[in-house]
Image 1 (cartoon, rainbow, N blue to C red):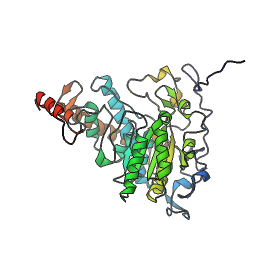
Image 2 (image 1 turned 30 degrees about the horizontal axis):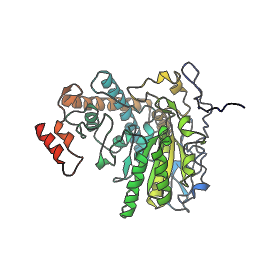
Image 3 (image 1 turned 180 degrees about the horizontal axis):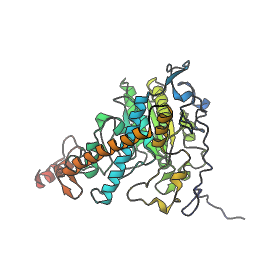
Image 4 (image 1 turned 45 degrees about the horizontal axis):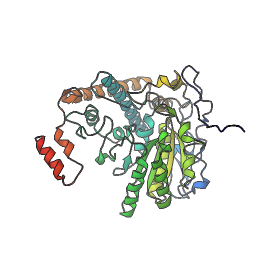
Length: 421
């Protein structure tokens, strides 16, 4: 009798191999149909393809490239562009700001001005574009790689840098790890470093919004690796049962730290496939296509606002940089894999779209990069004038006693007094 064997999935390539994304199916831009908002989950085949708007030349094509006329099952597609060119130029600036911020903060970490940082290289379109589909008051439950939600939502860049440096200007008063931002007024729930907690939290918040008769929706964000956590599945059960106004985003950037996405996906054809098992409409979108991300986000948000329940979106993208400043991706993936990624760079693709539309140029792009870089550097100088990890002014230690209990317990009150606060 043959002994039993365990299946351990392996990525296509390891360091030393030639990058190979031949198993990634890339349908033509514009090929995916846009279903009615109230289409039943079992009738939607978008969990197995990709919603794409920008073609290889940069043209916006297909039904997702225009605005729907209304939000019911009788909606018809119009010729009105999904977003105006001024809005797209603003989106380009948001993505560039996030990329330059990453570059400056990575350098700051290497200079020991902060202890830790997590970059967004290659994933800028996911959060920057999705934020444009939301309204003020909607609540995001993000992970550490959705800082674009803050930038596109108008959150002060100085506050973000102060949080990374944990100086006296840090809005969280040094109580959160770097990049674990918190901004309730900007619809950005305090980031949890634990995996997949965002799913049940967002579902519960959306249930409360519906129970109270509010009009605000919730949005959850997790990575591909987090779909293997129990919280993911528990949250989907509640979302499927109670049909709250929530959008469940899974950012599939191919790598969960050093583990490739096939480990978490298991035998499912796609990560979006899992949502269908719970009766939740589930779609996949080209996460490096700014217009496609906005279109998918708008469709899902419209469903939630119309009382049609949850939607799961798998954003197919690629983590071009390391997982964090503590990670060396060359140890587990081949050199050049980022350049071989077939969906390209989100900034380059939106730039090309604007150029072929006659609304942009290489010269204008260079000027925007210079403007954004100058702004980020000036803001960084202001933040560092307040303080960094090893110098300057820090938040008072008294804040360690605040924000947990409404009435401080006697033993903590005693400790605070002994500390001199």
